[in-house]
Image 1: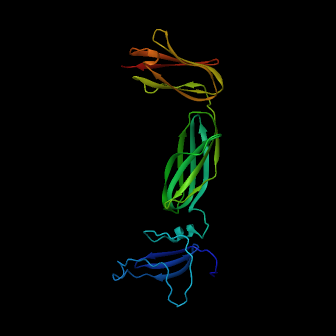
Image 2: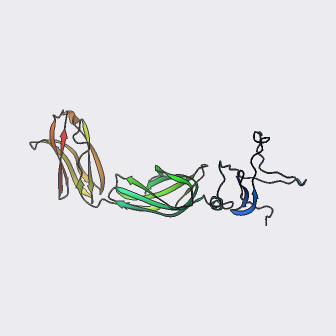
Image 3: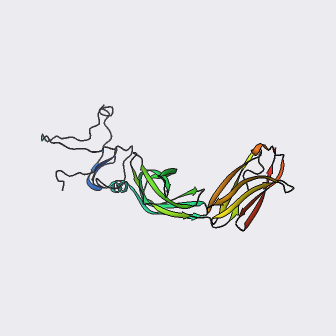
Length: 275
C-alpha cells in the first residue's frame, strides 16, 4: 500500500511496441502492453510525467527526475531500490598490498548500475586526500567485475586508500579505507635511467633501514667526479638527478661509476654519457 507523507521511487520503463511497466521501490507494480508512439504527439513540446484525470486535485512532491535513453531491465531497476538506497554499485571487496614501492589495489563489484567509474584517492598520515587516478566502470551490469590499480610511491610510511565511486549523473559514494605500510625489503641501487644519457639521468635506490649514506660518481680511472649526497637518511625510496654539467664541470662522453654506501652496504652501477 502507498501511504501519505512517504517518499517512494517510481520507475516507469517503456519499451515501445512491447511493454510498459511501473516499479515502486524496485518492485513491479503494473505491467501493460505498449503501443508505438502516435505521430500526432511525437513532436509535442512537453513531456508529461504525471497526470490526473479523476477530477481530484492533489499535490505530489518530486525530489528527483532521471531519464534514460533505453528501457531499464528488471535487475537494473531492482538495484536502484527505494529512496535513500546507496548508489547502485555493490562493492564486495577492496584490498591493498605492497611490494617494495608498488602498491596494488584490487576490488570487486557484484553488480553495477550507471557506474561511470572509480576515482582512486590516497593520503599519508599527515596529508589530505588526493586523487591519483581513475578506472572506468562497466556502466550497467549484473555480472561480477574485478578491478586493479598500481600506485608507485617514493617514500616509506603508512598510507591510506579509498575509492570514490562516481555515478553517471555525477553522484558519488566513498568506499571503506584500506591501510598499507610501505618499507623497502632490501638495500638496492638501481640502474640509472635513461642509460646512455645526455645531459641528465635519474639514479634510484632503496634503503631498508635508516643509514648514513653517501652517493658518489667516479670517472673511468677512479677519480671522484662529484658527491651527490652525504648524510643520514631514513628507510625509504630515493631518486637523485645527475647532470653532466653540474658544479660547472663539463663532463666528456664515456663510462662513469656510481657508488652507493649505506652503513656497511656498498653497491655500484655503470652509466654511459653519450654526447
